[in-house]
Image 1: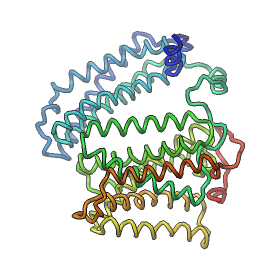
Image 2 (image 1 turned 45 degrees about the vertical axis):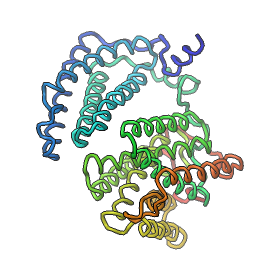
Image 3 (image 1 turned 90 degrees about the vertical axis):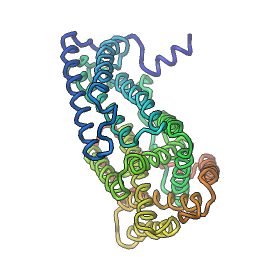
Image 4 (image 1 turned 180 degrees about the vertical axis):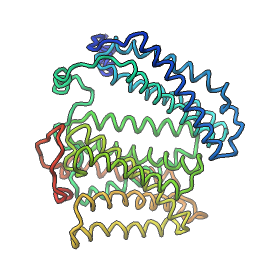
Length: 431
């Protein structure tokens, strides 16, 4: 069955294990520690949730007897699955990690369902964090207490150089050259993502969350499967992250109840941590060095954080500060000129100028999208979320087709040095 063989190859189920399975004793020890750690994490999250949100005290799913049984069942299944994975895959950690993500996403579906039925949003958010905590505790316990003996460095290097990897190393830069049209398309994706996420939120929350998640997964898989910059793949991923980032940021405010000032600070901290990790690992934040999977992963993590931060910041200025959507859009339109002037006239580094402007494009595009889509009663033009999303998507699609045909935004070829810190001058970016 060629179709089945292709699917198994994609998920690395090749029945050719290169690692030694963990011993039964180690798996048993990992099971005990995973159960204890997961129950402790659940209890801490419940305590923190009820302390932060007193209205959730006494919530039925916060009772120990309610969540303990399901937690233990889930941990046992994971501990039984790990030895099986080591026997059916030559890349067990790769497969087990993705299974953990998939199972966590599946377990979030009932949470979203009860949220859609009207159960308290803050309580449901704590339940989702509990599922995530269980996955993190169990995954790390198994990999550190009951590890499979990994393949040697020579074997791993051979795999990187062949077609065995689902996401092969790039052959050229994976992001576009920075031109005026780049900024135009970027602002359109931010506006479209904002409007699309708001439109999906008008109906079932479960359906909207599922669509946004699938949109994100398809976009990232497509982008990471390419080995050089492809306009359609890149901007599809950017559009998907814009939509998903809006949904996550809005959920923290509307469902969990964190004020816009709080979500703005939260995402600013997340962005700073991503920048710190990226620079510490690679020695540069220049987009001209996105020539390895690791650097590309840092890049898209940064993009996600900027989208979430921009959403929170735009809502903060429009609502919390009372500026309204149009005034906020005009304000951010003026702010985005600051890095351009500072770079051209006062010697601001190209990398700093680029990321300054990149962050500002999000509240700029989102503010104008909200202005066109929201009703007159909240300072909007009343065009509607659906029509605004459709218009933004159409304009973006036309521009991306133009870029794909003309190829004006292809970066010059450079020689990547995977695994080495890049020695790139700030002035290499944006010119």
